[in-house]
Amino acid sequence: MRVRYCFPVSDLSTPISEFRKLNLVKHHFIITENLMSFLTLPSLSDSFALFGKGYALQVLKSVSWLTYCPLFYWGDLDVDGFKILSQLRSYFPHTISVMMDEETFRNFEEFAVPVAESNIEYLPYLTAEEYSLFTYLSQQKKRLEQEHISQDFANRYLQKVLQRDAQC
Image (cartoon, rainbow, N blue to C red; front, side, top):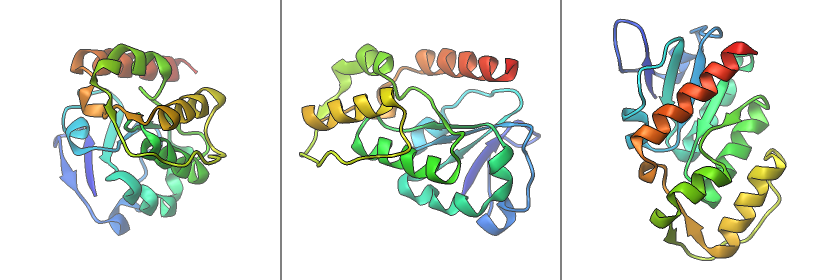
């Protein structure tokens, strides 16, 4: 497990058994699906980040303090990204998706690539907007990897989302 946090170190790895013992509930927790997106996250105050390794984030369900922590998930705009988001929300329903919306897809659609056909399935933990985009991407056989979203766009988006969350 790789974690980024704004304390004297910028990157550290820790076993899940030790991660469970932390208690960072007053901080924003950002999970990325892919390593490059994790490594290029900006330094955000009162925040830490985790490289979720796709479906491997299921190990987080045993981290009870995450129930009380503001959680944000940034995955690929594809069938698997939305399945992972739904899986994460099954453990932590308060998870907020970032850059997994139609506006982001339309801004970077030129970088979308074709994928093999996949079955549309019901993902009970997606919002109506997320499910609509999941269905569209599945039907159109498209995917937009998060690495194709510009750094400037990602930085502005994250700043805006975290500021809005801090005001709540």
